[in-house]
Image 1 (tube, rainbow, N blue to C red):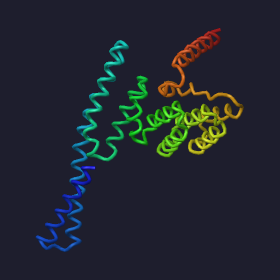
Image 2: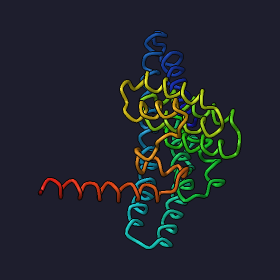
Image 3: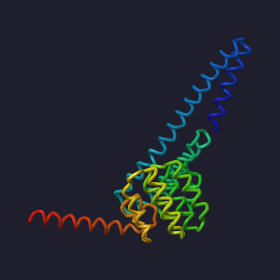
Length: 254
């Protein structure tokens, strides 16, 4: 990364001047050189991050704007946000993890708009602690029948984000879909060790043990963004909940 290289070069130059030109003791020269290195690294990091944040903020503004427009306009706004985020990739070699975070964001937008093939290279280069995009990558591998890559992706994801209930459930869902129910049960048990007492994981574990499908709709919109079930199911559930709530209110009034 350019930032690290420049900082080290500045530190080395400072040490050379202090130790050989000014004849200071080596430990004094080294201490001051390390301070120079840290200061330059911090300064460059701040400059780069401000530039990246400005670009990402503009892209997010476009995404927020598209919510109140037509579907065609929404797609245009998402495409515009993607182009803006792609422009931020010019800074990926300057700062550690910047490229991964930007790639994750771009990959997520492509995935959400169902352009899975376009999303793949970005998700593949994404930040491993972004569990949502890692989950999307895992689902992509599952759909391509690449089970080993799917497992490697999810293993990396749960290692980086062990407290995310949906991530464990999604991993189990994909394993179950690829005819590994026993492995899926194992993953849910591992998830419950990381998140003891989690109601959704507990319920899904019981369902799998009974040979039934996992109940993922309880995770709401976060689940549907992975495009494994149609969102219509969520709307039906919301309608049923609304109707049930209305019936309960009527009973109370009586």
